[in-house]
Image (tube, rainbow, N blue to C red; front, side, top):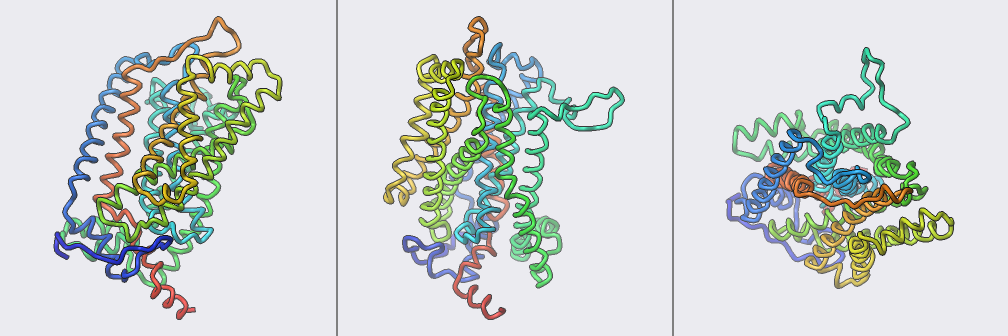
Length: 462
């Protein structure tokens, strides 16, 4: 296919999963051409360059951190958890949408997931990679991370397995491993397609190695389907367990504002909320730049908007439950902690997160908003900002005002806090757009199953 060739299909009607006019060959051509033959758009270079610049900033910030220690950050007594843990929880939450789309929606046979699951899975991997940076850097001596593992040692120093900080290590590492396997297994059929289509001998060799001998035989498909279902079954409880374990970092403590039993479902709902916001923030520009409106249709955007609205209401209910619990429980310290959030030095951040996470998403009730890519993109950015502010408020405001007034303090982020945070955004963008350029961002074979002739063929086989 020529570099300047465009694949034209009919505009999808509202509510359709895939536009009419597609065939097996046109789907394969359009998706594979992004990697193999189509000219790289200027948008890709701009986004990749922006991510690479922030990545250089991240390397600088980490270099200074390792040279001078965590004192370059704003963490001081009593707020010893600052941006690092805030960003850790935020990035882990973003990764949840990919696993939910891949595993839970697959088991529920939601076919609309087929066009967005691939880049959502990649988003999960890169978000978890960014999240994993912060606990290591927050240690101050990241080269001693293996102390958290139950390795044999002669000094009989073992991890404290009753600590949720140790649970995080196992939960996040398991989540990353299963997500990586799920993503790679799903790539194999498409890697075989790229291997057979590319004219570059080096690319053919690389795709051939990654495809691991995939030939599309009946035996291969049988093994693939079995492996996919098993991995989906493993990944589904991880969607609920990982952020539940992360919430245990707070809920088992006696710090006012943390000691609460509903943090696990609250954190899981917030993770899905921010995760789908990131899916929209990535999908909307990509479908526009690469002309994928026929594959990522308004139906996909509408469904993601509905999920954001539903999880947003769960988060809003959790906010109200926090206030009600503090009032109804009669705990003076809990009441003071929430009053401090609403009226104290962090009041601006608190009311900003209420506006971003509760007020702004209410516009998603309107079909016109959910069907507008521009408005959905703005909504997703607002939600991502609000969810970061939420994690910031939970961590910083609770630690800043503890039981003893003489130990109260104010957290002030330094330029190195912001540089490290912005640097992980750069790492995420760098990896994600590298993935878009090198691998199919939409699953070729799964989208092909949405065609009418695929259904007829399946019925004929049965």
